[in-house]
Structure formats: structure tokens, C-alpha cells
Image (cartoon, rainbow, N blue to C red):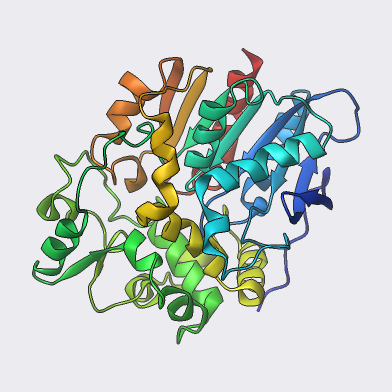
Length: 366
């Protein structure tokens, strides 16, 4: 296996103690100059603070102190227990974020920016505490707003309908919420490194089959149009699903946005920690017992400046039918721009880092 890639010059690693019961590992840039405004970067699954490595320095050069933590359940952050699922609910993840801001000595940050599952965390930060999080950037996962005050009803019907398809299918978020997903990925036959290579490849613009479009509704027939990394064959796990799309050596060599040494940063860390910490986030999203408190915010909007960024080849924009549209029309009334970037899939801040950094610097500069 390749050697682990070093951090870019100007980005350092350190720990912040006593944050909501955690010892949080962070990467930071722009730390040399005191008195700067702060920007907080929140990663998704299966990622780490390291996923922000290509945009941290441009933000620091723009005059900001840039902080990217390994979030609860990930990387070198400790103090979490995978068996305490309740601690991974959304409101507690927001407590982690605001606790880190305060532990760093800030009353507020210029912007909170989140990718993938970090995007809803960033959205909830801005919705709940606009005085602390003065602007927000959402990447790859649109925010449709808080859940309705009255539950939408039994959500099992969609899973029964997916299971009746030919071939029978299941939704990846509910698969990730189950008891088998961690073992499927951690102990897969190809090994964690090869699994992650295929997973990152299949959700990127490098996989030619990614040609997303809006879905017409939350029905089994519409959801079945999503790739199998979202609507999985019923009797397969995620590692088995992506294995046939493993890129060959030439494709890996051309993948300059995620080199083998860079991928090794991820694979070695997940080999140590497993995936269960991150999977608990999905458990708390799909189990109504863990997200009922969010209904208290029904009808509220994000009233700070917002921006959305995703790759044009990212199915994440449309995986929740109608969310992309509701984000722009209702939940984020101060939306400054929605940008779908050429040559990027789901991992937009890694695949097209220069363009993303340009957008981010322009946004916070306003």
C-alpha cells in the first residue's frame, strides 16, 4: 500500500479538548495571524477533515482562520461511543460544532460550510444559531427545511415497495442504519482501501454513468432511477455493490483529485475506527425517535446568507425529490447562488477544488 500523503504546507493538525465530551482532532490553516474571523468546515461520510485539504489554504489566504474537525464518530476525534446512538442525533452534532467554536475562543464564525452529511449539520447550525453561524454553504446535499410538525406517516411503505421491484431494492440510508453495514464494509473481501477506491470512483464524475436529473416523487419507481449506490440491490451490501466498478490501474493513475497516498489517509483511518460512528448518523436520521425534536423548528427558515455547491454529475442533488427546489424557494430565502460545477460528482471540493475555492472565497468576501 502507498505511503500516506502529508498535509499540505500551511495546514496543521492538533486537538481541542473538552468539547461536548469529545477530544476533537482538527486541521487548521491561517492560524499564524491572530484576530482573524473563523470558517468552520464540516465533512460527510465516509470522509474526514482531510477532505477539505484542497480548499483550506485559499480560504486562509483570503484572511480567515480555517478549521476542519474530524466530526463525532470519525478519525482521530475521541470520546464518542458507537453504542450510544442517541449521542449522534442532529442536535448533539450541532452542539459539537458550536462547542468547538466556543472552545477556540470565538463568539461567532463568518461561515459554516458542510459537505454531504456535513451539509445538513451546517444547515441546522445556521437555522438554530444564526448569531453564531453568520452564513452557510451547503454542498451536495440540499436542505429542504425542518420536518413538518405532524409526522408524514408510516415510512415503511416505500421500503416494501422497493423490495417488490425487479430486482428487489433497498434505500442506502436505511441499509446504513442497520446492524450489518459496518461489518460489510470493514470486513469486505476486497479490503477497505479497494472498497473506498471503488466507492469514491463510482460517486465521482469519473464514473461515466453519473448523469443526474430531477426525480418526480418519493416513489419506488422514481427512486429506482437512482444508481445502485443509493438504491441498493436488496441482497447486497455497499462493498459488494461498488466492487464491479473498481477502476483499473490507469484510471487510478489519472485520478489526481484523490491519489493513492491521499486515499490511504482515509483507508488506514477507517481500518482503525471502523464505519459505525458515521453510520450512527444515518440511524438517527431514519429513526423518528432520534429526530422528533427537530419538529420543534417546523416552519423555520435559514435567515443568513447561503450558497449551494455540487457537481453536475452528483446524484446527491436530486436523491431527495423536491429538496433542491424547496431549498431555493423556501428554506433558504437568502440564497445567493446555486452552483453545479462541470467535471465534478459527489466529492466536489476534492474533484474541482480550484473552482470550489473560488466560489467560497467570493461568497465570504461579500
